[in-house]
Every structure is written in structure tokens, then in C-alpha cells.
Length: 357
Ligand SMILES: Cc1ncc(COP(=O)(O)O)c(C=O)c1O
Image (tube, rainbow, N blue to C red; front, side):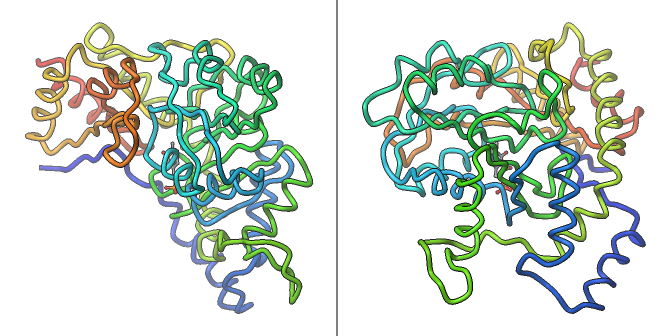
């Protein structure tokens, strides 16, 4: 029986990839801001219509560098409990405290109406997530940040290719981070990025991502966030297929919509968002129904994923905080298989199993 996983990395035509690898073998440059990294950085920053774009080794180091470049190494960061663990771990790794604000039930992003009451004199920043590619309330969050003089770092790991009010969703906040992990809509095997609003913060991040020194002059504490030429080669080979990946994901999502309407709940449509079809989350009526459905799929070698589970306010190594909506949704939500070459036949088969007939 064929196995279907929740995702499958897009693979470009091998010849197009090996052409980039041949270039690397010709010039012998493997890393340290080589020509492939530069080329990909230029292409992605033009595609997204953003300045100060830093291509990095992964999306987690992007979050840590974002905090560090903004000078945030202590205090409280207001964040969402409904995300991948890297959002919270990056805050803890920077020696800050995550303060969780519950989420909107409609699109699972941080509830902007609840942010102000979580602000204390220790709050330094807000770190919301455009989870599954859905837009946070960016204007409202900016107003709050302005009022209390806080920085905003958006975790945009899921938001590549999404546009909000006519511009890239990655262009909001002081810094937005992104992930180009192999499971993402656009990937470079491993990889990430920071998009920085302010040029001086961008210059600091540029130094910090390569150990904080330039030649023999050491300016500040840094880390290694650089990306290799081989990873950039995969990115350059995948780059021409971004449109194809989004439209094929849309085909799969539209078919699920048609087949599953009335059987599962879906996030609300956002009028100002050009969605990127990064994920296909479905919400079941109860955890028991979710577990039963995932087991039925598993018996047919189909692996949907509980994503995100558990809610991050319930992590065992942090002080417990109460976020009832996120805790409840985390127990009832799963992402269905979604990738460009998932066939209509497979989508129909998966949907039939979910419907129970
Ligand atoms: C919301 C979110 N933030 C951060 C990350 C971390 O990205 P990376 O795996 O590139 O380190 C991920 C990864 O999957 C993610 O889903």
C-alpha cells in the first residue's frame, strides 16, 4: 500500500540542481557568503519586494538573531502558545521569558485584543506567528507596540508567498523571520531568513550572523548563522517553481474544501490575505474524533499530523500559563497531507476516509 505523509519536499529537476553544484565545484567556494548565497538572497528579496533580507542557516537561528540584533537579551516577550516549539525555545535560549497570550479561535493567530493586558514593565517585545500562513492583526499589533515602545518580531516561518494588503506578509514588524526547511512551501533543505526594517539593526544582524567580527576587528558577540553554497543551490533550483508549488497546493486545498465541507471546521477566510496554501489544518469536534480519524487514516498508510500539539503553554520545562483556547484547539487540530504532487485521486481517497464513507 502506498504511504502518504503529511508533506513531501518539492524536488526540482535534478539537472537544474546539478548545474548549480557544478558551478560550486568549478569555483571551489563552499560557504561564507559565496555567489550562490548572494544570488539567492537577491532573488528572494526581489520576489518579496523587501530590503535588508538575510538568508540564514535555519528559521530557529533567525528568531534568535532577531532578538539579539534588537538588543533583547532579558525581560518578557509576549508570544503565542499555538506554534512550533522553536518560537518559544528561541525566546528561552535568549534568556527571556515567554508570556503567552491566547489565540483567536477563527484563524489561530495571537488574539490582539488580549495583548495589552499582558504587558508589564518587563515586556520588551511581541513575537506573534503568522501561523499556517494566516495573517496576524498586523495594524493593531503595530499600534500596541508603538504605544508601549515595544519591538515586534513576526515568526513568518509559514508565511512565505502570502501577501497581505498587496505586500508580502513578511514585510511587517521590526523583523520578520522565515524558515526554508525541507517541509516548507519553498525550501533550501535547511534554511531561514530575517527581513529587517531598520538598516542599522540589519547591519548589526549581518555582523552577528558571522561571529560578530569583520576581519580581525571584533565588534560584538556573534554566532554562526551563515548558510552554505550547497543549500543556496537547492534554493536557486527551487526558485523558478514557487508559483507552481503554490498553485498545486491550491488545487489540493480546493479539492479538500469541496470534499470535506460540513465534516470538519476550517479557519475563517481573511479578505485582505492572498493565501499561500502552506498547510491544510482541520479542526475536529473532539479529541476523540480526531484520534479516531487519524487512526483510520494510519490504517491506510496515510499520515496526517497533530500540528500543533501540545499547546506551548503546556511545555513541561516552563512555568505553566493558562491559554484555554489554544489548549483546546491543539487537542482537536490536525494538518492533512498537502504537497504539489499529491494527486486528485489521493485527495479524494483521504477525504472519503475522513468522512467515514
Ligand atoms: C512556526 C515555526 N517557527 C520556527 C520554525 C523553525 O524553523 P527551522 O526548522 O528552519 O529552524 C518552524 C519550523 O518548522 C516553525 O514552523
